[in-house]
Image 1 (cartoon, helix red, strand yellow):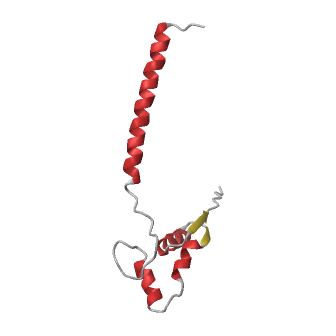
Image 2 (tube, rainbow, N blue to C red):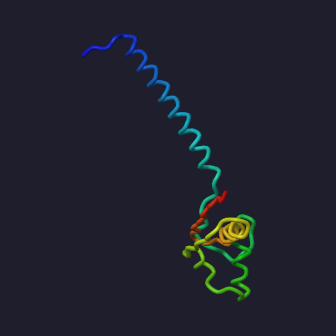
Image 3 (cartoon, rainbow, N blue to C red):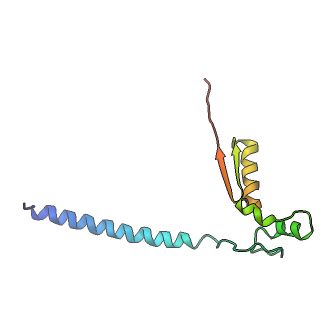
Length: 110
């Protein structure tokens, strides 16, 4: 089976375009990976700006909360992500909860 020369040239050109696009997307991915901070391996009760959980860990040091580190393994479901649910989900995330499952049912009545 033979193909016309112009078709082979078109396919080669398209392949070159796709390879260039892949290179561009890889470079964008590498840039975006640098935007995220590294996961905090161990929670410390020392209050520092680099540890977003440090103020909450200070509650443990003061004896107000016990075993605060365990919050990272909990999973919480928030049903309804409206005015109250969205704030609740945000606060749970800020407190360092392990996973937050969000459920929203939207029924529009005419």
